[in-house]
Length: 114
Image (cartoon, rainbow, N blue to C red; front, top):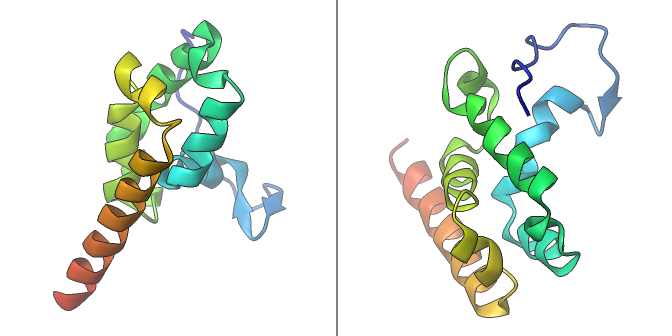
């Protein structure tokens, strides 16, 4: 996917659950259950979807980074999804639970710093 990253969201963009498609495009990857669903549907084996995951790496850079609600897990999962082994292993309920536990722990630790 040689496309350029999208422009930042506009005020009049349609909302889905209060968020623009721009905001939701990557944020769903923070959810280990969603990653497991993608694996169960065999999407993580599709070359076009793998190319899309590579394309999403623009989120690591400004100005896009500031739009992430959960930058830690979102960017971590995006990085892991670049690895074929992880894309195969995320079908495992044990790995999903490990990622959920890590995410909760990171969230609690982050809020302790407030």
